Amino acid sequence: MDQNQLKQQVAQAAIKFVPDDCIVGVGTGSTVNFFIDELAKIKGRIKGAVSSSEASTKRLKEIGIPVLDLNSVGPDEVPVYVDGADEVNHQLHMIKGGGAALTREKIVAAVAQQFICIADSSKYVAMMGKFPLPVEVIPMARSHVARELVKLGGHPEWRMGVTTDNGNIILDVHGLQIAEPVKLEQQINQIVGVVTNGLFAARRADVLLLGTPEGVKEYR
Ligand code: 5RP
Picture 1: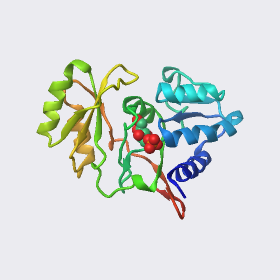
Picture 2: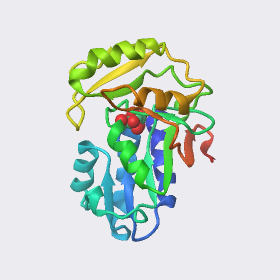
Picture 3: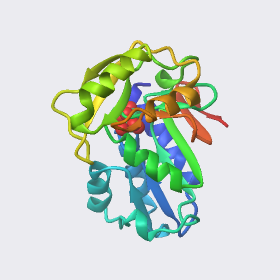
Picture 4: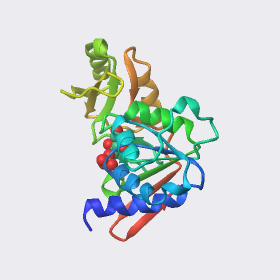
C-alpha cells in the first residue's frame, strides 16, 4: 500500500465521525484533500463546512459544499474538525503547518468540539521535532522572532516565497527535540510578532486515525 492509499483509507474512516445535518470543520493538505473527496459523496447529509484555508475553501466550493463564515457559526454547531498533521505523538499532540495554514487551522480547531486527526503511519512519532516546526510571523518581526527562536534552541529558516492566507511569513524551526510540547507552544506564542506556532498541544487531537498497511488504527 502506498502513502496515498493510506491517506485515502483514513479519509474514508473519518466520515463516520461526521454527524447528519452538521457543519464540518475542514483542515488543509493532501490527506484532507482525500477527506474532501469523501465529503462530496455525503454532501446531501451535511449543512456545510468551515474551512481552514483558501485552498480547502476552493475545493469544497468546487464540489458544491457551502462554506460558511466562522463568525456566523455558534460554538455548538461544529461537532468535528478533521485535519492532517506533519507529526503526531503518542499523547496526540501534533506539529502542523507544513502547508502554511496553521493559524486558521488552530482557529477552526478551537471552535470545534472534537478534533479528528487523519494521518498515515509515517507521521506517528515518540518525540516531535524532526519535522521543522512552522511559526507564522508578522513580516516586520521576522529577524526579532528568529533571534528569540535561537535562544529556545532552534534553527529557524525563512520559508522563502511563501505568504500565508493572512499575509504573513513562515519560519521553519529545525533542530528541536520537543519533550514538553504544551510548554514550548506557550513559550513561542509569547514572542512578540508571532501569530501562532504549529504545535497543537494545548488543544490536541481527540482521536487519531492512523493509516497503516494493516488497516486504520484508532487512538484516543
Ligand atoms: C497544513 C497542515 C497539514 O495538515 C499538514 O501539513 C499535513 O499535510 P499532508 O496531509 O499533506 O501530509 O498542517 O498546514
